[in-house]
Amino acid sequence: MKTYQGSEIRNVAVVGHAHSGKTTLIAALLHAAKMTATQGRVEDGSAVTAYDEEEVARGITMQNAVAFAEWQGVKINLIDTPGFHMFSHEAKASMTPADAAVFVVNAQNGVEAVTERLWRHAEEMGIPRIVLVNQMDHPKAGGGGGLSALTEDLHERWGRNCVPVQLPISDANGFHGVVDLVTMEAFYYTPGGDGHGKVTGEIPASVAGPAKEAHEALVELVAEGKDELMEEFFEKGTIPEEHLIAALHEAIREDRIFPVLFSSGLANMAMDHLLDFLKVYAPAASERAPIAVHAPVMEAVGGAGDGVDGGGAETSRTFRNVSDAEPAALMVFKTMTDPFAGRITFFKVISGVVKNDVTVENYTRRSQERLAHLSVMQGHKAVEVAELHAGDIGAVAKLKDTYTGDTLGQKGAEIQVDLPRFPDPAMTYAIEPKTRADEDKLAPAIHKLMEEDLLIRFFRDPMTN
Image (cartoon, rainbow, N blue to C red; front, side, top):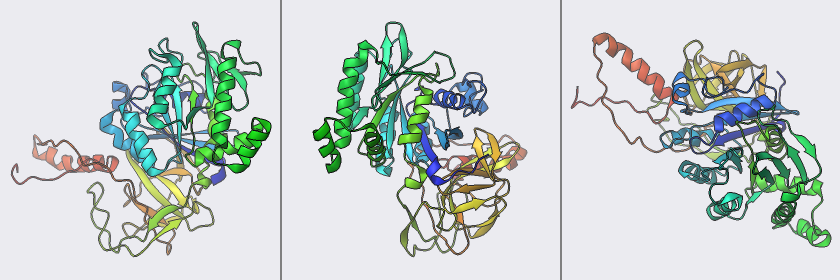
């Protein structure tokens, strides 16, 4: 597949409360981008990011999964995340490699508890946020108070900077499309289609008035805080489209505006417009602010999942630019055990260019690893690549001594990137093997779970031995 530069990469975490339709939304995006021949379904396990048997059986997402869409010259890396509160640490972890987060809101229920919690995490981590009101095709979309009540709720929770950049085209017969409030064009869709809309310059009379008001509110908000834009706004009464697009991109990147969009993942409606929006307005991987790093500890101790990063003291704290010109470095943000491929290590390239078959240093554990069969993941399927540039997300199988949270890279340019802090586990269970043979199998199995989930701890209690 094509090699993408950092300016051509968008890393997006798709987060939100359970049953807001995140996995179905990603399946629709992949189908609209022609990455899949048909739109995958959660219930039959055909959705790209719903490949775990337990997840398919329960109909929920339990761990992060990565997929990508190639769309009009850019690569959009999508991280699917759990929405149930007991797995919210996974969703929080997804924001480490992400450069933006799409908050999926159920059109029937509005903002729910896990969505609110993850918003606070994104705010703490400085992640630009996009709000997507999904399931607009549902008869009860908008809840009891309709769209205006949902918009007011977003303003009350997240401020007036949470502003629509689209308006839905809906009536008694359902959801038909969206009005782009930047270009002031209408997009119409066929439910169950390929996700591509029919563009018309004519906005329906039923939404023409609200669209004009919403456009003016968007233009005014974008212009705030920018003297040159305010002058242009007062002089012309608006901002030209080309200036508005650039200014909106900048405002989203700087967390001054949280755009609100509308869609239906299940009906595959407004997917091409969402892909266009991510391409044009979401921050590119190369636009990320320099990443805070520190010198690695003097001597690594412990293993995966024990909560110990190492011993010794930090020697310095600095920043690393997300740039190909910097020394190669990558940060491991997820580990998955595959029954056929073994341990799969997911990483983000922090800086430099990482090439296939290269040998790198594991800065955290003072060891060397060979990156054989460098890949990008499409769900559980690996697509091999020759190289990955700064800002991209990749994976490699069968590393011998690398775990979640480790930093690897070019020898002589050691750094350490820290994962966010996670809460302590809230429940403790006693496990008792039935036989001696089971006891021998138990420890390796638990350690595999600990590699995949950083909240799992394992210890022997002398009171129960």
